[in-house]
Each structure stands twice: as structure tokens, then as C-alpha cells.
Image (cartoon, rainbow, N blue to C red):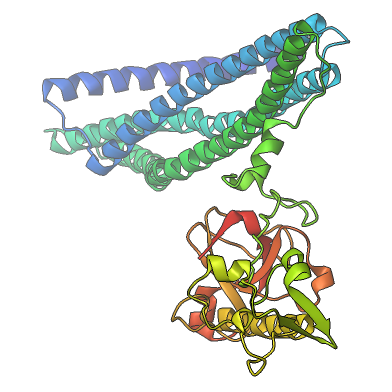
Length: 454
């Protein structure tokens, strides 16, 4: 029985082989006739254009995959080279040198940063690239199958036509040829319709794939270089301090490390946005101290001169009529000042208490005038002390801080509770908000040394 099954299987295999050979022979004959112009060929211009686009897309994707793998290999090579270089520096760095622990930390963080960058490229870009190209071999095989089925269809069509045109028509052969033609046409049209739908979709999908691939790579590169730049800046600061330590020891002086460049930049008025303060108790730099107001010209002689020229009579101070005060000698324009009194009927000199009172009143009046006019004819809103102009961008880090761009004009407000004011910080609202909304509700605090008083 086993022998009978073997014979049956052998017969089936032999039959399939003969059928395949017959198909190949028919296709070869059909191709020869088509090239010689003795048989017409089924043509589909739109499909041929889709196949050309497919071949181009596959070639571009294969090249991109190759170049991406080369880029990943280069990243791995740079990672290995960077690790060896950092390890070499850490081994050479002696324990008594400044920043030994910082150098070791920078080496570890650099290695982690390179590994993370490489892994992200592999997990996102490379895997997506492989998945994208995995669909091409199947479609390519189906296109080749479609070409073979189209040749079979053309061959069946030509065979059926030749039987119909023959002098001796055999209806049985014609019927069989017609049946084969219908079967070949059905198989060809099924695969042809599927490919006509898939090829344009695949061609259009390349744009989205390229966008996602290079956009993600650009984002990874941006974050990588930003973090690597910080580590390089830290290493540069350590090397600078080490050189200062060397020079100090060479000169025989005691040396203490100063602030890093990144910290010193915060104390300069020309700070950058990256040097902006993180907490208000430590603003980017010390707030400039305003100069004290100019003293009011004295209406009475100096105290040391008064000892010789005046005498006390109750609470009033009456100058001697025959004495010339220094203010008279240096200020001739004040000829009618009280210090020049020559007769008892002239008014008495103002007492020190009344002078202090007058000075306080006039100072308050001057401050009120300044708050309203800001030293010019422009009238400021109620509650505004003066205006400043932002010289640098400032990104708010807390909800109560004011976001500023370079060139913004800010109206400075008085603090409701002076105890809450931090040194070097001001309270204000943007002038653009005031002009648009006519209210001072969108106020916030900001570092004073990011601005310039107008």
C-alpha cells in the first residue's frame, strides 16, 4: 500500500512539473512573439508608472537604511573613542588636583549620554527603517507574479483567437481554450486590482515615514548636543580652575576656587537666558544701589562756624549782625538770606527742627511728583513708580514671575507688603498689557538686573 501511495505521489509531482514546464514554454513563446511584433501585449501605463515609482522608492529606502546603519556605527565608534578618552583623563587626574570628583562624574555622565543616544536611534529610527523596508520584498514578488499571469492571459487570448480564425474549427478545442482564457483572465485581474490599490498608497507613505524618521533623529541630536554641551562646559570650568591652582602654587600663593563661569555670568548685567535665576532669593546679580539724593542747600551756617558767631536765646538762633558767614562769602547771590541780618527787626533764622520738617515735606512732594510724571511730561498709571526696559529675555520659572522678552517695557509697581520683596527683584506689569486692558492685574516679579530704567 505504501508503494502505491509512493507511486501516486510521484505521479502528482511529475504532473506538476510537466504543467510548470508547459507554462514556462508558453510564456517564452509569447514573449518572443511579442518582441517580434507578431502578438500584441497587454499594457497598463498607470500600473507601469506605479511599478517605476515602487522601484525608485525601494532603491531610496535601501540606500537610506545603509546610510543609517553607517551613521549608527559611527555613533558607536565615537562613543567608544569618547569613553577611552574620558577614562584616560580620569586615570591621569591626580587626587590632589582640583575637581577630581567632578572629572569622574563628567566621565560617567558622558558615557551614559552616548549610550542613551545610540539606544534611542536604534530603538526608534533603525527599527522603523527595517519595518518600512520589510514590505517591499512581498510586493516585489507579487509584481513579478502579476507579470507572469499577464503573459499567461495574453497567451490564452492569442491561442483562443487563433482557434477561432482557423479553417477547421474544432468546437471542443475552442471551448477548452475559452475556458482557459477565462481562468487566466480572472487570476490576472485579481492580483492586478490589488496591486493597483497598494502601489499608490505605498508611494505616498514615504513622505510621512521620512518626516517621522528625520524629525525624531533631529530631536535626539538636539537633546544630545545640548546635554553634551553642558558637560563640556563643566569640564572646561574644572580645567580653568586647575590652571588657576597651578599658577597660584607656582607663585607661592594660597588659592581658593572662585565661582564657575556659568555662575559668574549670572552676576553680570549682560547675562543670557540660561543664566536666569531659578529661585528669587538668589537673583541673577546684585541690585544696583541708587545714589542718595543731593542735599538741600543749607540756609544756616555750618555748626563749627556757629560756635563763634551765634548765641542761644531760647529756641531761636540769631546770627551776629557784624559777622559775615561762610555762606555769605561763597554765595553772594543769597544777599537777602537770614544769615545776613543786620537789624533786630529782620526775621530770625529757621530752627533745626523746622528745617527738618520742611525738608521731609518737600521730599515727599518731590517723590509724589516723580511717581506721577517719572521725570517727564508723560503721565503714568496710578500705582506705577517708574518704567524699565527689558535688556534680555527672561523665562518665568514660577507662577508669580513675569515673562519678558528683550525690548519689552515694564511698569514697575510698589510691593503691597514690602517684607515680601526679595533683594534684586521688582514687581511690575508689561506696558503692552496696560495699553490693551487698562488694568494692572497681570503683574509678576522679575530680576532687576535684566532691565534698564527709562
